[in-house]
Amino acid sequence: MSDARPIGIFDSGVGGLTVARRLAEEFPRESFLFLGDTARLPYGTKSPETVERYSLANIRFLLSRDVKLLVVACNTASALALPTIERSSPVPVVGVVEPGAETAARRSRSLVGVIGTEATVDSGAYREAIRRRNPRLEVISRACPLFVPLAEEGWTDNDVARRVAEIYLSPFREEGIDALVLGCTHYPLLKATIAATLPGIALIDSAEAVCKAVAPLLTPASRNEAESEYHVCVTDNAERFRIVAERFLGRPLDRLEHVEITG
Amino acid sequence: MSDARPIGIFDSGVGGLTVARRLAEEFPRESFLFLGDTARLPYGTKSPETVERYSLANIRFLLSRDVKLLVVACNTASALALPTIERSSPVPVVGVVEPGAETAARRSRSLVGVIGTEATVDSGAYREAIRRRNPRLEVISRACPLFVPLAEEGWTDNDVARRVAEIYLSPFREEGIDALVLGCTHYPLLKATIAATLPGIALIDSAEAVCKAVAPLLTPASRNEAESEYHVCVTDNAERFRIVAERFLGRPLDRLEHVEITG
Image 1 (cartoon, rainbow over the protein chains, first blue to last red):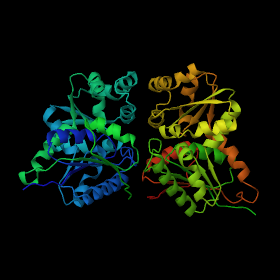
Image 2: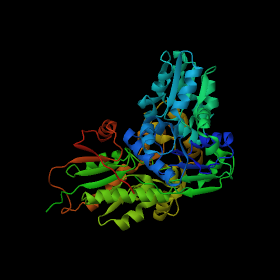
Image 3: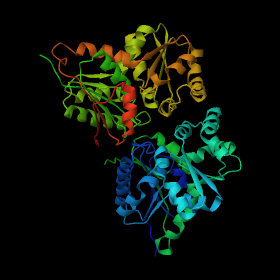
Image 4: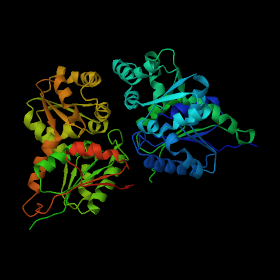
């Protein structure tokens, strides 16, 4: 008995491939169907209603391709739309917020910092999830909107990145956080600069935490024992996405497909 | 005889309101219906096919509201989709590229710089339009992707903005341009920083140029002699857009409406 259906993953764009890559390393025999909603990215500046609408369209697409498990790699969609996604999905759903909050609650002793998009921070989802696990922890959140375009521009450790990190993050240093949740899949690309700005602070990357949450869902009967396959779908028809995707994944893509999703 | 139908304007987001504002100052008796496709912004990193698809959906919406004239305030849509929009529109269409190129061709003696989104620069639309008017002019184009998030973050004249401007624009100084087209509706917000980086260079803002292109289309019979009205529609349901929109327009909005556009 085994289950060769792929694990479905979606993100607003390319960032979620860091999560896909960690999952592929951890579960090398599984197949993955990744959807990047590159035609409508970013989600982080959009309203909860719009993020919910786009997320539902994305999971409808993944379910139509017969996935056995859904991973919402996008922090904004996890923060704003997870309950709605769970209600609409006949297969198990794993978001990035709960696993990240779990790690933060374990690693902090007093004060957790959270950085993310405007929509993620406004939702209060990380704060709520961390304090549900340990009500004695305090949580301070801050949106860092320029980190995403810096990561996409490839300016991850130049003087502009260091200055932007200093402006966004120095208040955390003064407030005395002991752990920082990187609450957006783009932020790990800036990890070295963030670490230099906040020396001695534990940086929590949700890709790691998601692997721990997925493991118990892959029972012997639901594991894949056939050939594994990577299949990446994007909603914007940009072939340049292949280069970025292969860099993120660290291996060539078997298939890159352009799909149209509306709704 | 007069024509009370509004002038329809669309942009991927809020930037195009700078164009709407100049048009409203120039033609105070006209009514305007502005559509900001805030649910799907930005267009500047997306493929020509996607920008074309979104643009056609936007003009279908504006035409369904009975506009007498279409202004494509978005540089990316003007650069990538104007011929398609024109073919699909029964009313006259004005984009921002041709008027901006007209001004550039008049004001430069030798070498024009163009800055815009990645999609606008890749299209070569400004270069082609400028050289069609004066083949002796040389044109150098450069994408400045961080200018849009800087403008949206309100960091228009701090040290980060100055450093980013220096990195993007100093090559133009060395190359010796005598005019620079601000080929994205967000860039005028950074005008002071850009001017300080490129002293003595003529900065060309397409809002001005568009007014000149619209004027001859408003014949006595097609002008509005009734009460003028501003009506702003956005595709993302964000009330915070009202504050930004009123700041851009410099007056309260009569109506702000959330509309859903798919396709």
